[in-house]
Image (cartoon, rainbow, N blue to C red; front, side):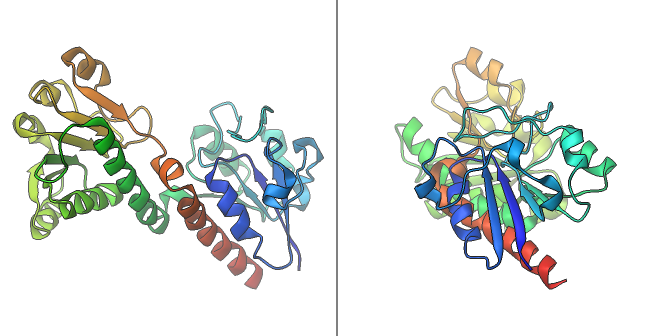
Length: 293
């Protein structure tokens, strides 16, 4: 049975995702929001959003960012404005699979209300863990670019011990940095110690930043506050990997003369091919399983 997939918007990661999806048999792919690319580049037919037949789609793949709070999608390869309204979602078949990187109140409310299957890929452990690798590599790249000292022997504090924080701490430790990790739970603090790293209670962050060269935040909440930034040495660098607006008081860091960078979407910047394959592998698994059902 032929499957119909609409890919609506996306960035450089989606070029590899499209190549991977083309390996699926009995699948028709409609591209929307890629009109600035030559058709030969993807080997797929470009489609105007207005020409889509939503009721015939088995899957919809939205950009990593899903939609904004008004329903507009981010299409890096198009100058068109593409808006997904509730009325458009109402025309979809109830069995459709809707893939996005992350969701928001707008997208979640509409799909919940219409009882549609929304799959935020970045909420999945497998995708997040695989993506933490290019995130960590991109962080290393940024540190090298914005410092005049080596990572080796640098004093690094990683704030948060989730899927990204764990990988970042591992990679910097492997490069010879002296890594401390801030976490809240006793279980995480125990695991950090077991890994041979220094465990710091999150509430005590400000007590340790006076001997920190690199402060890397992974928590999407305001956790790197004035008291912690105040103690940093002048040469210190803050890299915030949390989703926008990050977890750092950037205004105070600027006042103190501390360079602080909100590093968003590093996987898409440093390794779009790998990142696209990660997404494609999971999406293909869903589609194959759905077909098997």
